[in-house]
Image: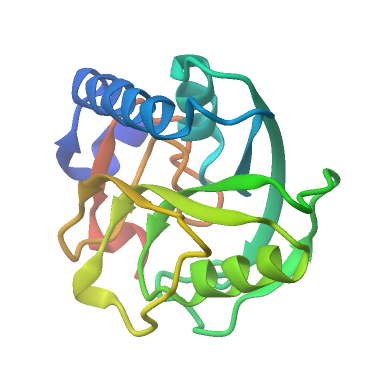
Length: 187
């Protein structure tokens, strides 16, 4: 079975992704270079794992890395709007500058939940680095913590996309590009 045959169209190629990740890393490095302690990258599992790995390798400053798991999709294609944290951080983020690394910001519910969670854990600032942003689907307008910034890889049209870590029912994460999944494969 070829997963490529399930894709209606490719939105971003591996080369476009690599170029944009490098640009984001340069921007984050410049914004956080005066920090006296390492920046904390928190990947939102599981979708952000490839993006987080590429971003971390491209940053030119000390970082620590951890993961948090928040679930709002299950095996569906639409966020439930009620995210829950199913696996928490191991690192202490109290007094630290955190960048939440997310595959896609859709309704905003998950990212708002995670920002509040990190604030409760004592983070001094929380930025968000989203590989894809779907502002057309936003229902919750989240507030970044302190001097946090919002870094966006690409603005995503309102399609169901997979690849580069993003899945449907745990498949397609390994595609090296981001593509639109044909409806017959998720309906």
